[in-house]
Length: 329
Ligand SMILES: NC(=O)c1ccc[n+]([C@@H]2O[C@H](COP(=O)([O-])OP(=O)(O)OC[C@H]3O[C@@H](n4cnc5c(N)ncnc54)[C@H](O)[C@@H]3O)[C@@H](O)[C@H]2O)c1
Image (cartoon, rainbow, N blue to C red; front, top):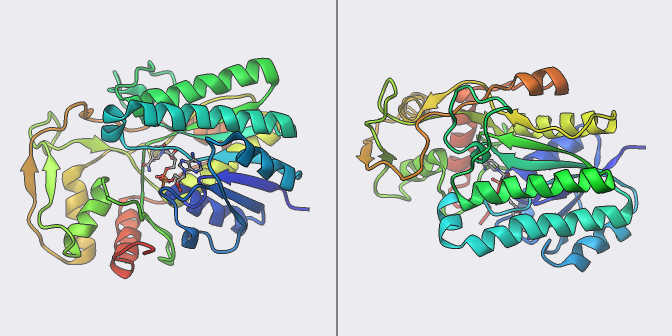
């Protein structure tokens, strides 16, 4: 019989791609989402239980209704750095208390394996690139801190209750499914690629890059963009690792390659065949100059590797956004 996986936040961007990949690999899936940012249409063939992690009864009931859940992938959280600095309570409550409620429900049900969406934001501005998991942890935003605190909560549940977990510290999720059925529908768009797509579709009047005077070859910031389908396979590899008896451990999930904002612009011009104007705004406070992953641990321990690069990210993003200008709406 196939194993059943609970996916919290499975109606969201990364969650819905992971649900599809789980189903492709013949896992049974149950999704739990409060639809604050998620979309029912993003999940085609799995049961979706609408509920809020901040309500302990609602998440506990999921395990009662599905006593055969063998593992959990936990995406449900808020993730906007800027908003987290304005509304810290919203982030600490959802990202930490929500995680505590999930862990307690798992304990009640005897479920001991958890894959957690963490983020490279736990490293803040790294001292070295590429960033390994040994990089000092020093988040520079409430969002990053909330994710690190959630990791620490899990460390204690491992120590005192034996729940084993893998924080996957993703770099920048990007791209969409290759058949353009699902993609990034987060509104308002804040990530550079969807913002640029909205601009090309006439939904924004101007397109800005924040800062062109950074000490990088073209003056713009450098990030590690990882295709969302590569993130999906990393989660399944992490669950397999835990089921095989692997100990709790964090993994950096990125391509290992840095891409500047201008390289994105160039690839978008090439893929779409459109030329467009780029304006440069001031630097955004707190933006690290450059950050990309050392993914050696994930490759060696999980046997995972990214399959896609910037071209596939831009091609799938363009296909998704141009066929779904209003997301799922
Ligand atoms: N997108 C990125 O580049 C990125 C990078 C690093 C880490 N992450 C992490 O990955 C995870 C998923 O990110 P995403 O981009 O898919 O975001 P998303 O907003 O599309 O997905 C999150 C989902 O969780 C749901 N949710 C939020 N709070 C909930 C609650 N209390 N109860 C039930 N459901 C709730 C939302 O409705 C949404 O469907 C997040 O935990 C985020 O911190 C994302």
